[in-house]
Structure formats: C-alpha cells, structure tokens
Length: 347
Image (cartoon, rainbow, N blue to C red):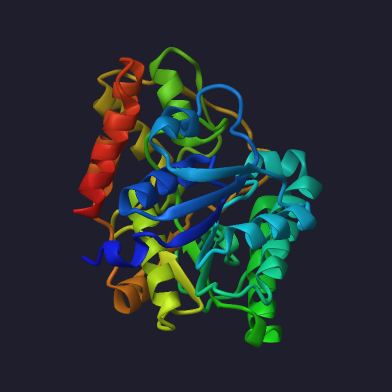
C-alpha cells in the first residue's frame, strides 16, 4: 500500500483551500505531521463544534479567511503563498443546502473553482494542483454500475450538478491553458466519514447526535453508498499530488472503498449503534428531491496508477470513527487522539 513520501512533503509550500472544513482540518494536521509549510484559504469554521478548532493548537499553517467567489482575494493569497502544490478542497458540500441555495452553491463550487484555476495561470513554481470534486459527478441512472473516470458526467441536484460543472471547467482550463497551468488532477471520492464531522443533515454526525438523545431522521434508509474513512481518502489526495508533480498522474481519479464494502444507510446506522452500544431509533421523512438508490465507484485506476488502496474496510472505518466520537464525548484530548489516527494511517 503506497503512502505519502515524507521527503516530498517536508518543507514543501502547500496552498490549501477549505482548510477549516472537515476534510481540510484532517489534511492540514496530516501535512503538519509530514513537515509541509501550509497556507490555508477558507471561510471561518461553522458555529458550534468544529474539528478545526479542536485541532488548531497542533496545526502549523498561515491562516487566511476569504470567500472563493472573490477572485482578487484568491489570486492575492496564492501569489503571496508561492506554493509548489495546490490542494483545492473548499466547497459547498451539502446536498440539502444545495436545494436551499442553488445559486450560492454554484457560485461557491463552480465560480470558486474557476477563480482558483485563473489564479494558477502563469503562477511560477507550482508543480501540481489537485482539484477535489465528488463521487456524485457522474450521470447516475441508479443501476448500481461502478463508475469509471471516463463515464459521462451529470448530476440532477444542484450540488451534484455544480460539481459536474467543475469537472467540465477543470478539463477546459487544462486543455485551453495547457502552457500556463501546472499538472492538474481532479479527485473524486466516495462518501467520506470519520471523526470530527459535525455538519447538519449528514448521516454520521446525525447518528452521533442521535446517540446523545437527538432524533434520527433518514431520507433514504435503503440507499447504498461507497463509504470510506477520511484518512484513506486524504492519503490518496497526497499520493496523486506527488504523481502530478512528477507528471505521472491521470487527469481524473476515483478513490473508492474496496470491492464489497459499500453499505446501505441502515447498515451504517446498525454498525454505529453496535459501536456506541445504544439502540438508535429513526424515522423517515420525504427527501426534497429523488436521490439515486445506488452509487458505486471503480477505484481500479487509483490502485494501478498510484498504488493506492484503502487501509480500512467497512468495519474498521466504523470502529475508528466511533472511537473518535466516543473520546470526544468523554472530553478527551482530540488533538492527541487525531494525531494517533494519522500515525496509523501513515504507517
């Protein structure tokens, strides 16, 4: 199983968007562990519990708060950071919020991505850029086929459609401005879970809140998704950045759980009920719009091109995630706990 190369990351200047979010906070801590010099560009974390605030004492970075829709601010921060690697994670990533604010979702996801691409044009010293999208960029007719990177793009809900539009923009800039841009890869990951996600209307945070007594409401209890642990996916982002810097990365790559590790929403609820030692009761409410009952990715290219594969299977993903939240609920030292999880992921 390939792992990020510490010699590549030690002292390397990295510009990351979305460093205050769930995945961004974990990735900042991982890059800190690897010795990178990180500049972060993001909105402040959401009110309430936030992984970024829990990990902040251990994060080594230059922190900048800005809106991706402000192209001038994006360019100014990238120019000042002089990065050799850019990791673009910032997004409006909630399906429900996409329905409530479709224009804002497209602005953040599509215009924000274009602003990053424009800021990269002609910026000297950048070797690689990883643009994170989602598993939901594919045209999904619900038949359960594992999507490959060359499958048609689509997306019916505003979030999915905005991310598919990002993929089209990335491909356009990559072709139209080839001589002005570094090696650019789009990274498409399955449903990422792990400790420290507190977002509203997302399954695992809702399950954690239900274990503490809140009601658990499910939209599609029988929907099947490619769940995987956040640290497995972030390890993939770093590997693809290394390959992009060497000119050996594919243009787009899926990160998916091992074959047979997809699970339904109800199976995930049952797994976390057992891990927390509580019986979780749930109710179903109508979703704002239809969602595909089945979603699966083919991760073969990531394995063949990068040597990447997930370290944790489904049971291991649930166990490690549940252990993080259990420690948090006990008032544990979550920076220390998270550092130990990262050491295991990098070992």
